[in-house]
Length: 263
Image (cartoon, rainbow, N blue to C red):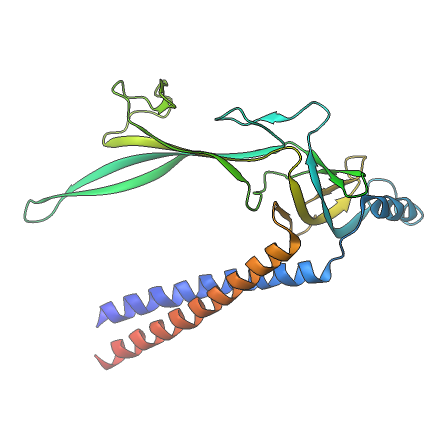
């Protein structure tokens, strides 16, 4: 009987989590539909006009900007693992290991598991040049980019000396020794210079120049290599899939709890 209650509660918890994700996807979709795509020159005009009512540094306007990624004046970034020139990067390093347990009858059970050792999004600002040739700064603030270009997806077996190997080169065991390690996987994504971007965020002059970044006080911030239409369609599909998950998990949870009362 208690098993029905436990599994019923798990399904209801899944329904609650899926409902929250569904609402977020719907909110993002509504934000994209209700926000105007503006050229950078229009934002500069709005910023200049705002000086009559707000001081410099306090201009804020939610908008969408479309254009191509451009490196900062210091030059492009170099991604951490592959050294690829880019304006933004993300990498993940994971350890793969085997966990050995013994059951009550003495049999040996091996489970394959993973743990994340390092995971980083770049924070450096870069530019977006719109279709009219005007440039605006983009502050990613450590946020993820939607659909970046994957440049590394590699697994390296555990080296005999105990440290990880990366692309055939043995590295020092900076992560500490772990029994059962079978290897390390490396993944890296970049946004190369010249890649077309769709951005939803807040245009502001907090840094002294016109930038677009995550809105202060909450709000949606999307940086994507896909078009606005593609991003919208993705959010619609996610919302539809999650709505089915909410309905199915909630029904399954209620049925199981009902069976628990009847058992």
